[in-house]
Length: 530
Ligand code: FE
Ligand code: CA
Image (cartoon, rainbow, N blue to C red):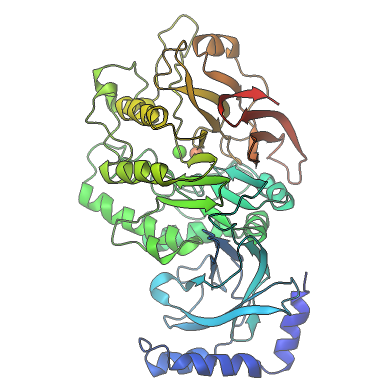
């Protein structure tokens, strides 16, 4: 990799913006009709007292021709405005085929505006399919770190392998992001984050580090929280290594919310939606998302398809924004009339229709749903001998829709469905049936639930009552409560999930190990120990 401190020093001794970059800026001026000349003149002189690239770089949502490149200028990441004046700043970007940034194949300039917290989302086009690229930004005399990204294979290509990781639930106070450190060292083509990327709670003592401020509510609050998370070098490193595909769960906004309904009683939905608009905007600003996800008030479209040639199609879901309120007051309950009501929806009608159409259209060998909450209808009793209850915040609270979706997968013969899940800070492998309460019926899909990066602290190696849980739920093939992420290797023949475990998140630098691996053979639903 290029030595960036050298590069920065060189830029400084040359007295600021290089001639080549200056010309690039000049050429861009005529193509920026929206900018007043004052803002542009100001931005041309942009120089920063300290590094504006403290939050690193990221890329995401790759296609076979392009990718979105992200950064956010914030010389003072924990300041409400990131330490920048309310002015537009020009940012140059370049994409090269080498990490020394010598063979530049695409470049341009964009504008980081104060309305979007000086975030940058560049949608690069015209790249070759299925290859690695390197990218970097410049603003004034500052250069960003170099990030690595890649395009996916062409839609009609038949790649023989894809390796990606999926992660969820990264609580800043609960532990060090050692799992991200190891993700950055795995040679991944892609990374998925399935939600709870930040947590909204107030700063509390007793963790390995502390959230700044109170529970987040304003746009500035959410921005600062996202920025604080990105002060973690391992999170930045993981983003800089490969493209990420992100979706949220509840904590990016507020615990266990359902659309415009708070888990707390007596919150006015209009106020709550205003807060949701703050949360969603800050999320957009902090993530490598395309402009199609730009929020419109409290609405933001996050569900989308990411393809990987004929090997895999990922349907990325949003099970928070459109859901009806959790039945039974969101308390664990039996699958009663309330849980089974056909009026309950976790996807919303529009997303559900889109999902079905996307699955019909798919030419992927592996049809993967990248989503948040557990789909397996797992019954749990709190104490031995007590009634077995289901979580109403997960798909069982929306059991009619859950059963209909599984039936759709079976009836339409969608090839090799796999469900990826986060949310519950524990690892699971579940065989999914149309109705999991009927273990004699055929297996339709396999669910891999990944544990948290840190949330819940170190967890436990031995799960109490595991035997009873497995006996009550024949679909559950594996369950564990340690920390880490799941590494997936896909070939046309098989889907392998490695459950990667970091034993200690309370002290930095802990080792990683693969605790267990499961494999699904193409054409043969259900996971087997690898
Ligand atoms: Fe969580
Ligand atoms: Ca959650």
